[in-house]
Image (cartoon, rainbow, N blue to C red; front, side, top):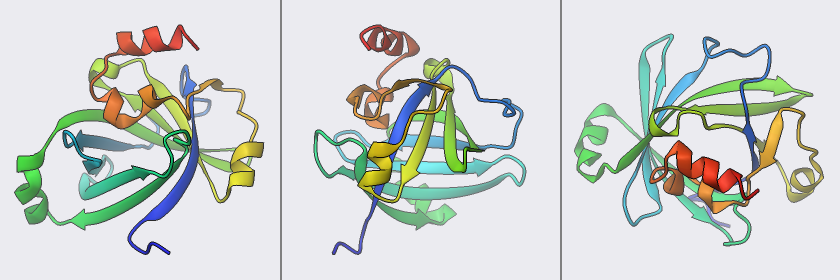
Length: 173
């Protein structure tokens, strides 16, 4: 057993908007993901607007299988402000997004509203405890497309993309 990483199982859906009752003014966190070129690592800074507090995390994401992008091993190291500052020399290209949480039919979803050059991209993500739950899950009514296994929608690829690139990809779905 690998005690340095936890395995996450998830599905990701494109959504047009936040589902009701959520609005862009609803409680959320702000994510700043800096991808370090040619690595499986990113720096994630999390800002909680209400408290104005920051959390900094060095993350490594490893896909267990190239054809199962829904299964990822995630390792994290939480950094204090001095450590984070020290690692800034490795900073990469950044994705910014606001994350909202919402319970739908007894399941917690994370909704990401992308900012900057990805403005217009909105996703919903849900995690599962096991493969059976993942495979038997019916997409919610607010899901437009299931992009779980589409590599274009991985952060390390989105960071190099624009919303126009996303539109082109969606036109093929």
